[in-house]
Image (cartoon, rainbow, N blue to C red):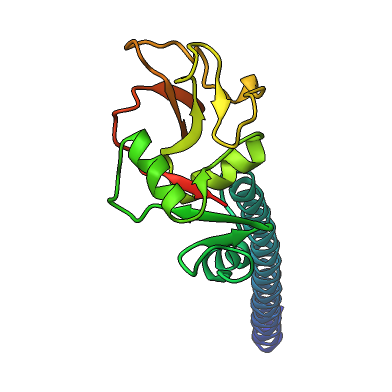
Length: 215
C-alpha cells in the first residue's frame, strides 16, 4: 500500500478512536450523573420516612405518658375548681365566717399548728356552736383528709368500753372505716378515735391532734 493511503488510514483510525473515547467518557459522565441523582432521591425518601416514624413514636409515647399520668392521680385530689369552692365558700348556714361549707355541710378545721387533747377539742367545737365531726362513709373520710391528714373526730367508747358512740348520739356502725387491726386498745385506755389516711384508729384521748368540728 502506498504511503499516502497508509497515512490516511492511520488518521481515520485515530479520529475513530478519539471519537469512541469521547463517546465513552460522555456516556460515563451521564451514567454517573444519573446514579448520583438516584442516590440523592433515595436518601431524601429515606430521611422523610425516618422523620415520619420518629413523629409517630414520639406521639405514641406522649399519649401513653398522658394516660399514665392521669391514672396516677391520687383519689384524694380534687380539681382546682373544687379546691377553690372548698376554700372560698364560707357563707350560708354555718355558725361563722371561719367555718367552711362543703356539699351543704359546715366544718371548722383547727388552724395549722393548733393541736389539743380529745376533750379540749370537743369543748372547743361546742364553744363554736358545733361538735367533733361524724364520719359515716369513706367519701366523707377522704374529704376530711383533704383538710387534715390526722385529726380528732367525734367518736369514743368513753361511756362503755367497746361500745363506740358518735358525739351526735348515734351508735357507731361503720366497722369498715377502721384501719386494719383497729380498734385494738393497744396502750390501754385507747378510748378516742382519730382519722388518718388509712382510716380510723383508736388512741389515747390525752394525745394532742388537730381536730375537725361539724355543725
